[in-house]
Image (tube, rainbow, N blue to C red; front, side, top):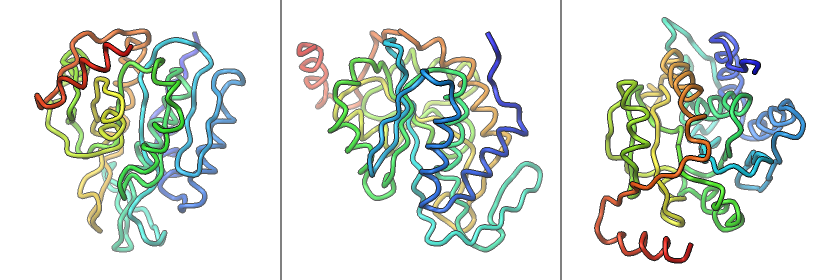
Length: 259
């Protein structure tokens, strides 16, 4: 098998591309990356509020989720790099939340055939994620877990209402620590159809401020770990899904009875 893992320089170039796209052109970049994939590997689902790469294989796989909207109001971007830390020289938000997640997902799609969801309007209520749920219910029978690439720092495994210790241990053995998350697209999706959910640190810090930065080496480290671990989740059945609040336990039981 040909190793499609991106080298650090190639990965960094892709991150720069994602950061430098304005709101209009980021969708074009994602679509262009889709057409660079091997013909026959994926179908492309387009919507005004999301894009999704769906493998033609019928295997049960994780859904990898990231969002391409940012809270940047203008794209007066001048990236400064020092010791592998990126920032915006122009006293403005860098936009690494969550363009670095987009870059990691695009890089992974070249190597591992999973479902990759790129959403819009996460920052204003997870609208793209909700739109995806409403219009693609048939896909959820092919999904065994939700993995977000939208967490600050470099060592967090953020959990939400529905989680799996087995899934979390995949990252804990790489020295990641489990923390409680508040909100992101995967938590929105799990509220519709419960499955084990986690959100992984991708290297940005001080998001939503003009001091936002990105540790590009930390982002690449996350990418390398995902390259190693995600193939182990293909056709994986999680039998240990738990719920943080008892209130939702009956919903899990009901969902399992329906299936």
